[in-house]
Length: 581
Image (cartoon, rainbow, N blue to C red; front, side, top):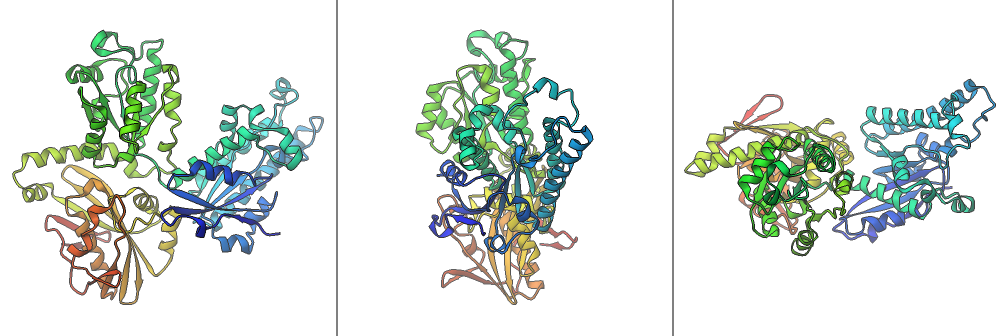
């Protein structure tokens, strides 16, 4: 019996990214895809689903059939119920060693199947549910005293799944136990559905699992927003600074002040994983920044904020100004403000901004912000870790620009060095991230998963490049990516993206010239380019023409027999040490 497909790429809008996903489970999952599809509607991507036959997950992991291989999934979800994994477990009257051996055998069987599948299919992402019993033990107190109970075996199995995810870059564990705990087991499961059709989720459980899946897919596709913009009074601290004075605002020092401090700790966690923070507050700037700098309860200090707008202007105008200063789109912003009026104003004036609906009670702030779907992340790159440092360096560059009299003086004074980096497995997450998140300087806006990058690295017809930048202010990291398809003496520029952080410094010209040098050394004579216009990439519309490409029958063509022009203020090297430019 083969599995069945739900939906198809031909039915999807051509502007959407379509991801192919397989569902493997120990119970009926047929209702899940439609629920996920409902949640991701309008998210800019869609899913083409295939569901494997009921309870054949292990066979399909160990020996995928031809249907699976023809479908070429990018994601495989593995949903196994604890009761199904431990079906037939010896009763409590059996020896503990017998129960332990049974649990270890079943757990090892699942973990080994996942590990083999992930190793055999390194370009497929595997997302496995963690395990939890659907109902409490009949003797919950006694179960804690006895060895090798189901609860303890499940805990051990979950630990082994997490260990597997740590070892295998393409394995992730979905915290369904946490999801069920939030919903409540009585609502998460509906035994009537199970006894009628082996359906493990009730109506609320199905919605909660679909939310978990949609979050995972959004994170996999790099839908994370870039900047949190936060208010001050009654948001970052309790009370109105102008009325109370610095010494009387509530942050830390016990009581509800701890709630505001906990919110700041959550924001700091986002900051440390690469999200920019900004302030937008109606206040007196000098006094407000003094509070941020000096109040002993503050977790966040001035150096943690990439942009600050403390004034009496309309907040919509301030958010636009912040986006312009950070050179990001409005759809990269998350707005946090206790005022329902301000939230409503931003929703109306700037619909592309994600507005967080804070609960009325500040005690709920930290939990609400910690669960933001638009800030989920699956892999932490070096660029993510250093993003806030890089933003401070960018602020220093802007200060340098204001001190220099001409643009040429500024560019030469930066002393920019670039490194052309041939693609590698270690670079794949960052290169994929660049294709997913770069909208302005993106010639074709093709979006790729890490698995797609790995596919091209393994294909002899493809060349994959990253571009690393540093200057006297500091490292900018890998700021550009290119995928080139080579056909003997002709090559096609499939993807060419440059981070908005380095636009205006000639990086894109230096990157293209370095790529052309490499292709010419391989015997390539002509390079073909393509520009696919969108609402966001107008800044790159003239790039090919300005680089000497001629338009012919829908493609841009340029000879690379001679070096392409490259900015003289950028020194370019190839990773092997060769110098260009």
